[in-house]
Image 1 (cartoon, rainbow over the protein chains, first blue to last red):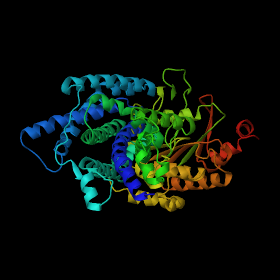
Image 2 (cartoon, chains in turn purple, blue; image 1 turned 180 degrees about the vertical axis):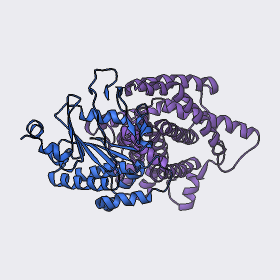
Image 3 (tube, rainbow over the protein chains, first blue to last red; image 1 turned 180 degrees about the horizontal axis):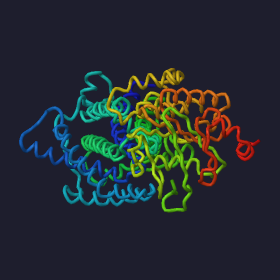
Image 4 (spheres, rainbow over the protein chains, first blue to last red; image 1 turned 45 degrees about the vertical axis):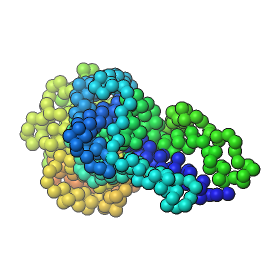
Length: 336
Length: 227
């Protein structure tokens, strides 16, 4: 029995990565949930929006590095982030003006808007591959680790190491700042309250003199900020590959639905639920059990519930279960 | 006014409704008489094909509902008339969204009128009882400091005790100089507090008189008030 070592193994392979991944999913799911709440459709182009913002960040990062600009030990991408945000805002406002606005004026049903967003997905998809290519891009520079597994071992004298990457720490801190700012905006400012009012009761918002087009514009701006931040953090933590961002759509939607569509708190909780389930269902627990069980009971197999290739199956199953048994999500949201 | 929804058939036929400053006007009539439609026509939510809507002598027939709010009209719909997920205080703030001046005075007036709202100001409006919700709805409409307050069946779905209280509050609002135009199912009680009553049948004015005269009119009593 060696509970301490087992815990460190769990922390190293499940808790720390899941917190980072959960924060990224939460930021992505927040963007999706805001579009559902205010514009009333599921935005399939959200993954591509993230990829587009991240792409701009990468291009600017390369430019900065070429000029010798650096904020070591932090990655240069953080410096480029505001430019990515601006680029992404420009893109979503452009698509809103030329695609979604038309359907909004025509009072199209949500499913028509969803299909339109699918079209937008393919357009953005092509645009991104045209500019930066379909391949893998690494753009994380700066220091790699806050604490390396080996340093942790020598520091504590334990047999197991706990590694914490700089990017994981940046992810958590940035996510907390962005979420705090978002909630302050939604709950304390007049514009934020008018957004909630519009999401709650569109007709009454009109009777109160709230301008819907302004609410929509502000929503897109916030969505672009969230998407670029989420995409950049994900890319820093792993790598940037356009197709991976498209695949992220499933866990992000699952997160938004688990929490309750249209509910920002739900999106955050959902992000962590999905991240922890995906990672803990696909982790091989052999080492943990070896520490916990008496030597003669130690498992010979990997004790892995699902291969990591099946991680999307985990989010998909959760999505289906939630839709079957609690369509409004954990926190009261809309059921679409 | 003559008009209907979109390009459909006319529902109102030469219907006339008016209310003076600080007065209460009530529109009553059987189901499907066009009571709510008349309200919506006044508020610009349907096509008026002939006739006009005036406020303070100004023609506002072609204005959008939002612009009419700016001109001093406030409308409390029959259903979904509050922001359920917002707190009571935020509901009132949203009512005053168009105003750029200090709204704290108007808000304290609303709280004086509906003391229960002050007590529950931080609570989500969706958690309140039916009567309290209606108070929030009326309070929200009052935040624009309107000249005319239009209520579509304010007592629908509330208990008789709450109904009496709501009518008292409505009289209080009228005393502050705001004109009130309302549609009511509870015709008898509504006509008792009304300065003017309109009995609408099939989109036309059938009887128009003071509230008490209509109550006394044997024909109105027999046809619309159940004897």
